[in-house]
Length: 171
Image 1: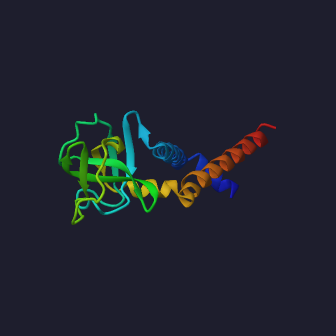
Image 2: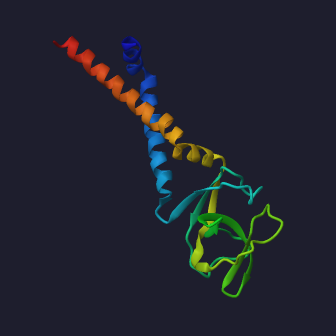
Image 3: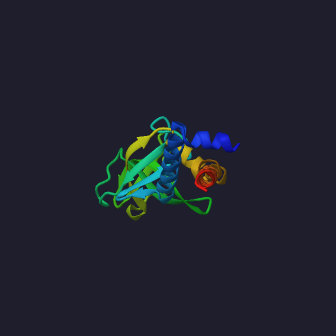
């Protein structure tokens, strides 16, 4: 086993492995925070906006002024679902005075509750297909074990073996 890890460490694959590990760890941290500057990132967890975007797509959301949203804009907003706070992403279907009426593209009817401007997180400016599935996996315990914890221990173990080999050669 020591020979395999020593050979693996000296190969191009080890550098690629380290790069992919750092990339997945950085992206995991980035998506755990869920924002960069004025942009927020949300994973779509339902098909209410299909076919515009599907379950597992990422929505990049940017905050705009309260009176700048128009009919047809796709917005993310806070709403209680089954008593728990959730982020919903739907299209503005109508504007009535100082409130918005929203509707999912795949829903037959508009949402029952009107949307107050203060609950809007922002307007969807970009949709990244499929990446949300990876984000959901990275946020899970199994995903963190597979993509962060296990590779970290493999790297540490390989480095200790290399240090031990170096120590034996130089004593």
